[in-house]
Amino acid sequence: DAVVHWMRMADLRVVDNRALSQASKRAREVDVPLIVLFVISPQDYVAHDRGPRKIDFVLRNLKAIKAGANEGRSLKELNIPLYVTTHSPRRTLPTGVINILKQWNVKEIYANVEYEVDELRRDIKILELAKQEDIKCTLVHDKLLVEPGTLFTQQGKPFSVFSPFHRRWIEALNKNLHWIAEAPMPTPNDCEIHSHSSYADLFNQEVPDEVEGFQCEDREKMKVIWPEGHSAATGMLERFLRTKSRASQLGAANPLEEGAESSAKASRALAYKDKRDQADRDTTSRLSPYLSAGVISCREVVRAAMDLLKIKGVESSRDTGVGMWVQELAWRDFYTHVMCAWPRVSMGRPYQEKFADVKWEVNEVHFNAWKEGKTGVPIVDAAMRQLNTMGWMHNRSRMIVAMYLTKDLMLDWRLGERYFSKALIDADLASNNGGWQWSAGTGTDPQPYFRIFNPYNQSEKADPTGNYIREFVPELGGLRGPDLHKPSAKVAQKLGYPLPLVDHSEARNRALRRYKNPGTE
Ligand code: FAD
Image 1 (tube, rainbow, N blue to C red):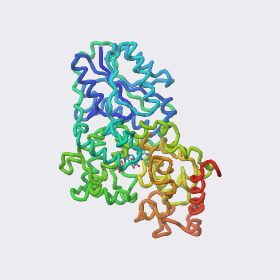
Image 2: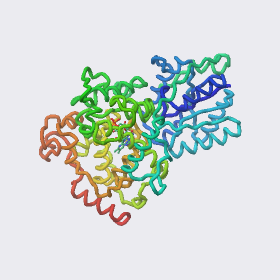
Image 3: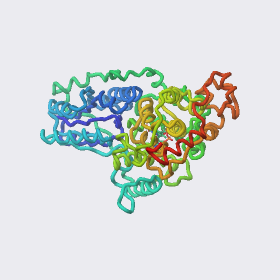
Image 4: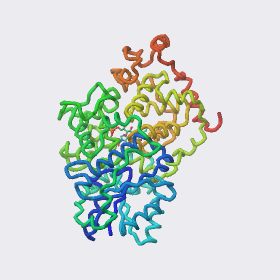
């Protein structure tokens, strides 16, 4: 007999993992071994536009969880086996998992909920099959600070507007501080795990280096910028809470090897309110790859932020750096709540259905120029090249390039969403979709579609020093002042830099016409 924790792509950690913690407690109670299972499903990765960087990050973290020497925080140190298997086709995955459980004679299985539609359907199927086999399944809420389905408007509806959601969210957290409590660590497997012949082999099994079809070309670089493991994540958290931001080398360096810049008074966290929108400084936490893959729990990062302020509750004021940062974590919760309440958003449909018929341009040349960072608009190109080099992009830059694709180039937001999903190391369906629909004006945002960024004005605000453009668009490395943000045709030609694909004010008018009368032009 054994108890199984089925680890998924968004809870890749041993510390503060609710389902794993419960599974371990149960195994101890009934005095049977605990086994951790991970199922690679390449067809799901194709269907869900997963990218090689994300898949590689998952495998690297699995290796760290399985065998990394990590102050008692790897499964090996706890004598818990991790079994990684690959399953295809995705349709039969539930049966495949049940067969594994039967082979191990498992009577109980625990997993954290994945809220995307296909994953929920898969879990419903598992529950049905498990019942037939008399296997007890426990699904646990773990991804968010406040679980979906708990916050409602005064009319008893799910929130579709962020600000009132945020107020209720803070209030609910402060009333229920146990929601951010740490889930106890799993205890070492002290049962005679080796006595069952098929369990013993599990310790010798290796986590694969790659998944076929998802070879990560720039793996070595990704390993430097985004090292795997819980201790790398806590290092990143410490960097945010206790060290100052830097102005240069935005993309190349390992953020964890920055040298001594510690500052209790002006750390990134404390300066976050004023500095967070600056793409030319490394001012944000860069925790998104770790949070989206669950390498660190959202509860752990909130607890650490509150420790910094030495307060018990969750900071609610948007006037402080930490309060503003906590608000970003509320956005993370919000978009998953929206996806759960209106699952159509995760199936390629706009939240505001009236925009389903907006007429989009079909223009491969423009789309390719956007992807490659060759649109002739320096801030857009710098941002896209940051994504292509780092697998990550600053939040303000994401908004600028998404707005540019949908409103200036008038290309379908779903093209951009998919490209992001494949290129980002922090890809998360709900946040990515929420960000794209916000920018396209089709989402929950109460601001109407006619908010259209002027990329040149945005550029001056997001990159006041010009360091961002100069770092990622080296052709423009010698430019200073307004020319850098909007090079004249003469300067651009001389430097071999492309001319803008469209004229911003003409494009703006086209977007306004098309959004005003969807389906007519
Ligand atoms: P910080 O500023 O330090 O914020 C802390 C954490 O809060 C982040 O790590 C993230 O988990 C969360 N967060 C911050 N801003 C947002 C936001 N606007 N929406 C949701 N969560 C947020 N974030 C992803 O994690 N995955 C995505 O696939 C993703 N796609 C996006 C696409 C678009 C078009 C846009 C506009 C935004 C997207 N975001 C996405 C949100 C945001 O850009 C990133 O979370 C943020 O830039 C990550 O950097 P950081 O960790 O330094 O953030």
